[in-house]
Image (cartoon, rainbow, N blue to C red; front, side, top):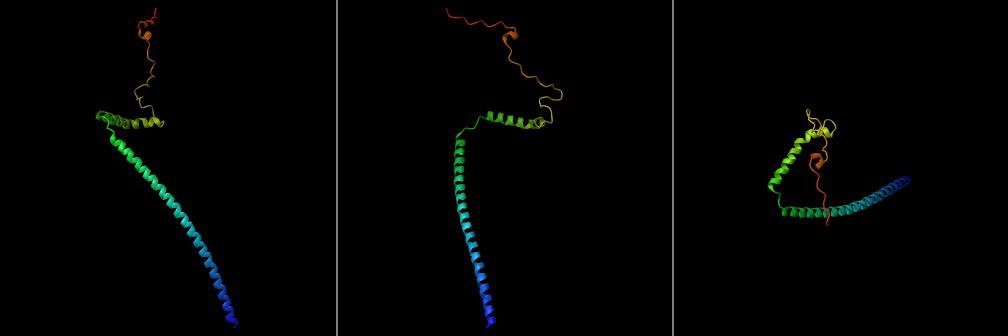
Length: 140
């Protein structure tokens, strides 16, 4: 009878140990469930904020498109001039790149050209040999 009593005691201890582990796992599962609920609420808030932001952006884009449709295009000559300007800018990029990186001379100073002088002030009448302007007369 003592053998069966010791077996029964062992089984009771194992049962209590299993119940203890079960209780721990249930607590862990409950805390995970609460964390998931919190995450879902946060994701819902973020999703709603993103939806509102996207709606606002789409409305802004629609307004911009409407404004652009209402504008008239610039004159074709102006468009051609602008296109040529940007083409010339793109063509001159390689020449300026070395200068801007500090690896070469100024692009306007070619190999045979001396550096240009700075422009001087506009000359006055005295410099050109013209007579002086008459002084304004006062009323009598």
